[in-house]
Image 1 (cartoon, helix red, strand yellow):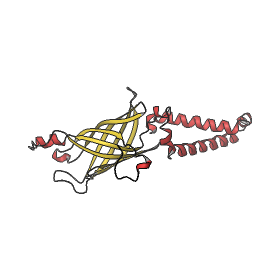
Image 2 (cartoon, rainbow, N blue to C red; image 1 turned 90 degrees about the horizontal axis):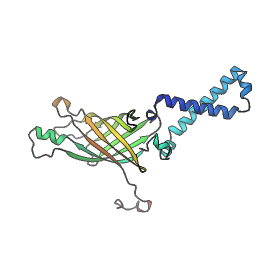
Image 3 (cartoon, one colour; image 1 turned 45 degrees about the vertical axis):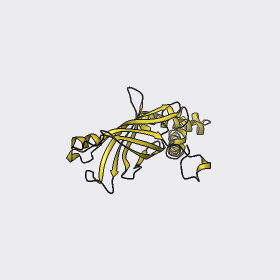
Image 4 (tube, rainbow, N blue to C red; image 1 turned 90 degrees about the vertical axis):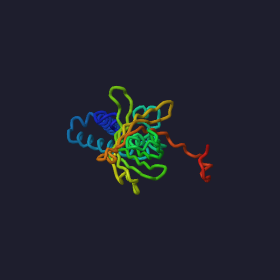
Length: 230
């Protein structure tokens, strides 16, 4: 997630935290430390270590996704962690029609769930289709802010595995997606496009539209029921 603010701003934030810790620990001895370079260096080194520890505690634990829900923080880091209901519209139907199968619709729709694990330094995603035909996990993920429009984008490369593929399919392929993240009235939604190298050597690689909607949590008093609340 640090890509949203960039490496320079991340380094600047680390410097500010380091100086704040240094000033807080040595506010009574600042003048004395200036005259003793070795002690000053040790004090700065200690402050830097504490700042690094603070970054790890806040950025690499469950604290970070909780902070992302705060009004000010979410303007920089969108709260994307959690389970999302995903709908994909593939152009596979159009490919099938070009192959002579006119009974297939141009766009085929598939639904599934994506689980997003979000931390300051890393983001992971896992997908499984509702029909359990295939599942995917990300190889590389970045969350960036568009320099021209100021919008946040979720870009990722994933690897898909299909245990029992159809004749026209393959057991493993790669894909990528470019998704816009919108945070309007406290509700985060995502939508974009994806494309794959699925059977590319036969001209069967696919592309399409993907949309995310956060999964609605079942109230605690309905956990024992076998169906979702309405």
